[in-house]
Length: 295
Ligand code: R5P
Image (tube, rainbow, N blue to C red; front, side, top):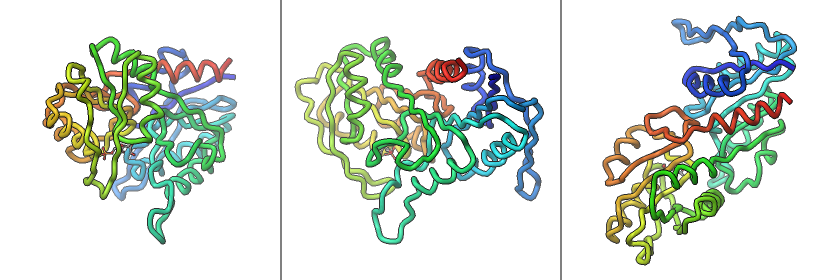
């Protein structure tokens, strides 16, 4: 069956790479926002009986979701055989339980919404913390890719004598894999979050790693307070400037500038969200899955 790949705005570079690697057709469509703020969508490429992939990473999801919905619905109306969302960053994964009475568990609501208009979901390292799998909330088939091999390759190529540091217990799932693949030790800290910008991290006890380069690894860098709080302790302990690696370059508000000015050696991310810190390319991972799907 033929496959065709559409890139929503902001996903063009990654999509180009995926298309180069798979030789899949690139989908042509028109997206227009009327002066009143409403959205116009028209698919130009023929898609009847084709498997449609839509690349739409989901940082700032509220701004994107309606356009995505229109495009997916239109693809089905134009008789695409199926519509698969490739969302390298999957939003709304952190409000996954009731923290206070009366709150919306938006992870579940968002999953219900996406599952209602997509046939399949492909994503990269979603924030699975209290949920063991996407299937717990998504009713469509989902495929989770992992950046751990790519991150460990990057560390091996760019950092000598690394000690990996994860900010909290949930980071152990990716930290341990990266450490094992890169053949380096890791330390796990404890984090308590009090608010959007208030994070408390347990002190790092890294005395025996004073000659190592600390490499902080987290799935999401949003306000960057998790990373900056950790860096504060590393500095107090006289450790070397840290390399910070995030899978998803969310960087809310001025987080990137703040992090860059916090005494780090380098900030590196994957291109799951396009950003100047992208140094780890995930297109091979996605292309391999699409080729497999097509086989
Ligand atoms: C949360 O549990 C995640 O794994 C990250 O640690 C968190 O999202 C980072 O957020 P921020 O950059 O705002 O501290």
